[in-house]
Length: 312
Image 1: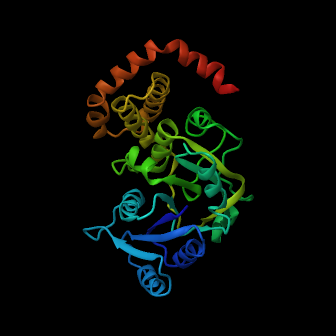
Image 2 (image 1 turned 90 degrees about the vertical axis):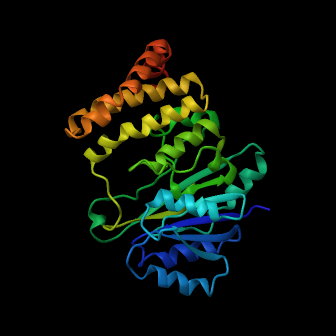
Image 3 (image 1 turned 30 degrees about the vertical axis):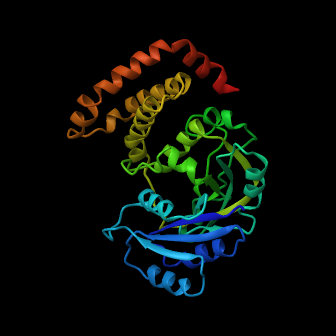
């Protein structure tokens, strides 16, 4: 039977958490909703405790030290507490639509090798954010792709769409296989995980043309300025390179990841502070040397990909 554990990391969510929880609990496929309290001083915890008396699927968990650890660590903790073989994530200020898991159940039933499914997320804008987004922000994959095509076509490598955290459904075994969210990364923990899943697992589309969840855009959303994203992006690729080496990932994947690490590091040099020069300069020399050598060894493939295959 297809039953899903839904994990909700909760931080600064007093105004939204009830809708998020109820949107998950009302779904037949949801076996449990796990809220992980990431320690924000508002009334969200009291709301969850009230709802837990009404909704038997709901449980509330804390980090062992009862401190703030971020969304990635909270999701990892939630997965460790889950009871079912399938997992999904929902941000505390977003909500599921009634069709959230209908196609996911069908895909897992149809493809025995499926490790996960992905769908489309729509959006609603609130407060001053309405002035920024004149049209609905849709997060989806633009075209039907076989699992082996995802890495090459989706962001951050390709340009045919994005995964949405609210619309991913995974076998728990697949999540654990790639190590979950890397909490050593300050940014883009989700992107880092999606790339690993695209390489190591088989992910199938469920509903890319019809939204299965709604992302709420508002002024309290966590925002990352462009310079900060450029500053930290090389660390995402550095981790992916190391992970690929340790897990024996194919040379073609590794070639692209080495190239992206070097490219993003070059772009970020202007943002490095003097205190970073040792950490991201001298200590990264082994990474620079390895990536440079590997890129030179696979240069014909890399050139073909950049000039021809990527533009298809």
